[in-house]
Amino acid sequence: MRTVVKIEVIKGDITKVTTEAIVNAANNEFWMGSGVAGAIKTAGGKSIEQDAMAKGPANPGDAVFSTAGKLRFNYIIHAAVMGQGLRTSQQLIRQATISSLNLAEKLNIKSLAFPAFGTGVGNFPMKACANIMVGAVFAYEKIFKNIELVQFCLFDEYGYALFEEALGKKISS
Image (cartoon, rainbow, N blue to C red; front, top):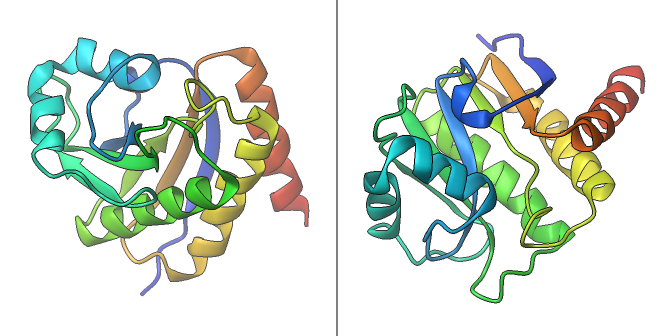
């Protein structure tokens, strides 16, 4: 039986959300630099990066999981939103979102939180990212089996507002 999926946008620190897993916007070798990856590594420890890097490199658009180190999560999903050139695209953001959802389903994760993919070091426009990621989750919603909650966790008001707008448009269409 398919579960009813709740999709929401929250503002805050992704390392402090209450979901079972969080997603890291990663490069395809899974080393963790700044931004969301840096915040996760700082809060959870270097073992997260070591575990993720042992599973790389991967193709851009793919996802792997690691332990959560000192964080309370069951898993960290690392979505390879970009290659070593640290640039992303609409296609990679969509594919990395879907790969993360596929992996969450495989791991029987009921709730996970996403950051905005590729909008930091990848320099991808936040509004386009919001529309792509929200659209990908809505398209995937028809095949959810385990996932009951998907959060988009944005650190600032700007990102939060754009993801809220994208979610509102999908809900009303």
